[in-house]
Length: 206
Image (cartoon, rainbow, N blue to C red; front, side, top):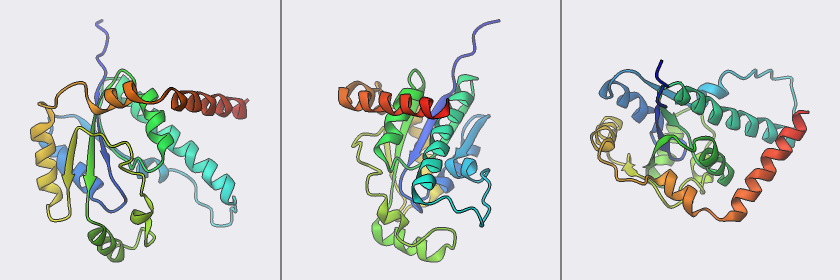
């Protein structure tokens, strides 16, 4: 049997309330079946949430980091089996991108920055009840990588319009893509830091 070609990955990156999930949902009927929309919230939502479990700040941050590292590897596992995947995920911490550059090395990744004005983000946060106020404003590093394959802006455009633009332009994106450029150009020090983090993580599990 011929080896299975890996699936493609579209990463929708942007702050909370920028419209990533709505765009991903609108993309699914426009793409040839099957594509999987896998938001990071779907992985976080599987975690137990007992209100009487007090982890403390340090342990909570450690738990969240493990969750996100696991999410990266779920995406890689799906793509390795030939599945096409849409990620709904903010690159709000430098280590997230650094880890993804390693975990998704060898995969066709399209990085889409989803932008929205600060005023509109604040308005959306006030309307929804499932996000703390100021979350989007706190995610200042979400575009720190300064590279992408596509940019859409939901300030005045609908999720459907943005989804159509992404799907229409998807096949014509020039190579090397943003992930390949970022992997090529990242400082050696960043690679060493990531290697050390991974080593420490393995030690903590033994």
